[in-house]
Image: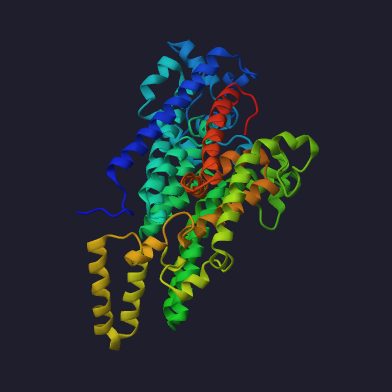
Length: 508
């Protein structure tokens, strides 16, 4: 079988796996080095009070009992692992151990604590007498996140090959993703790795036409981080374009089917996050008198997550625009500048497609966003048309056979002719558009609403950042130098992040 330039190559995928493993080993080595050479700013990470309840209510059926029962056989190693759990990692480990004890702990979604608890109670359970239960929880988190990152890199490469239709560009982008500027968070007790795995993997399955698997994975991304619900936007984008094409072809019944199917898939992606909010409402609000209830419980739409972000962390529109926060804006400026520049470059190169959200392309040619998400979706649409118009059945079947035969012979990832694929390859193709729109919304949210310093890790799983960097590296003149500047920025943030973050100093 002859592989096209737009098909994943096993040797390149192996390079991506090796790069991902090497980057995780590098990060873990740097964490160990800086922890050995320097004293942490805050030494309270190893403190672990008893769980508030003897029978807590974690995000899983049964939480661990009180870990303070017997001293571990290897206290030095236990202390080293426990003290390495810093910043938000303290919350994740505590939730895995004791459940959701405090209102503010509901800001941390349950997927990572659930995985930590399951692994520590099964594979790593024999280590509890050796290093203690909390150290086992921390160790479980490190294993989960670093393995998840390696798999996310593989899916990132596969997704990049389909979208860019250029294996060399996909490889460059994937290696840069392996050494991204927020790498410290992908190897620490944070939810970034699981989110990246399920969001990037879900998009790969969505574009491959595996809608059921894609919805499941994207829903799980919303169980890892709240911004996972934004991945429903890809389904909405797909739905709008397929419905638009159906309307242009005067097939209103098919358009309604597409809209209903898209709405159902979007609801499924939102459902886990909504269920978690209901879980918080049940634990905190029910069973209390009105004068004893928390303010958010009385709201018309009681959203626990929004209240926690606003009340405990001061998150809100323009609330972070203060002079004292200028260093944090400077810290986030490289990733935000890269995001803005990539969006502007795309908009300047493809203004009609960008400002029409791809609908102009849908109406005029096959190189449209309407065929982005799967060849299978187009074949299903044609099959629906066959059922709807039985009088045309013979003709439709005749038209479908060459397309299916062509797919087998050339194995293109999308419904494109060879010369069209050549003309529509790379970062500036219309297939990148929904990713650009998604990243633009996230960048605006990070700048105007969130604590701006989290932009580095918030945007670090956005594929267009790395596709754009890969595009710059092969561009002529000064653009290529900017591509290598991005590499230098990533290397600097890896060193700076592993130094500051691991020793409990503020980073991002």
